[in-house]
Length: 327
Ligand code: F6P
Image 1 (cartoon, rainbow, N blue to C red):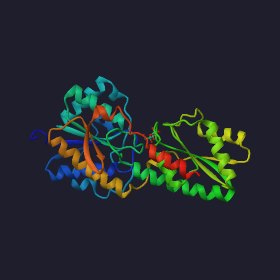
Image 2 (cartoon, rainbow, N blue to C red; image 1 turned 90 degrees about the horizontal axis):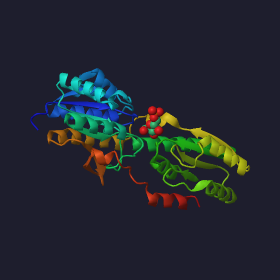
Image 3 (cartoon, rainbow, N blue to C red; image 1 turned 90 degrees about the vertical axis):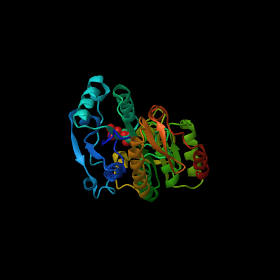
Image 4 (cartoon, protein in one colour; image 1 turned 135 degrees about the vertical axis):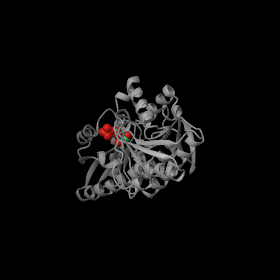
């Protein structure tokens, strides 16, 4: 505990709302515990280049409500090499940094795990990604905000779909998991939700859309997770349906990177604040190579090598709810 006097914090991988709240919490916890804190810009790339900035309690004023990350983020190929990690280690030593907190996704944690193994350097991860695809936490930072963003966007699309009696295919993010698609689809009342965790095939989609039409629905929304496994992208799906079900006037909307932006929800701000404190206090307790997570609203620590290997299982009860709701 006594040998950690200076902690670095940085963001890595795809940004997500709540990252700034987590940075703020790490910096303020260091200040509270009279530790020095340094921010590293642009993730591992900035670590290799020594792009550091001393941080104090005032450095993180007015950022809790801001999307994105004041420390920027990046993906870094060089850090995947031993030489790159050695350069990063040398920079940290030069800056007299004793440990770091990485806020990011599984790719960022894999780098931290390697770094810890090679240099015996204390690391703690905070799960920051909208995908909610990391084992060891019920929620990742940014997921709740992204769900609300997507539901709001689908509500808007539903306005125009119902005005023109159209069928909309809406593609959402989530990399290779379907949490955003499933939860936002149920929340926005989508008629069909296509997720990578269950490929129900195109015939089932056609049957469901036929049933919707027959039951008197004049417009429909189909949410497609970007990692969906039908083998067709969202534009090809639209074409396929137009071909096989000419009764529909079909359009496509790809939500894209707007899902990553926006002011974080209260839930994400509170979770980020809690995780930042836990990360710093865990380092002081001599804990390393763990990811901070939340389960049943309690903060827990999961070994990073477990966190990077698994995904949070898709909620089968919610899949059942979504099937029933399409009646
Ligand atoms: O991991 C977050 C995420 O937004 C994924 O949902 C998406 O597939 C990916 O990042 C996009 O990556 P990039 O920002 O490099 O285009």
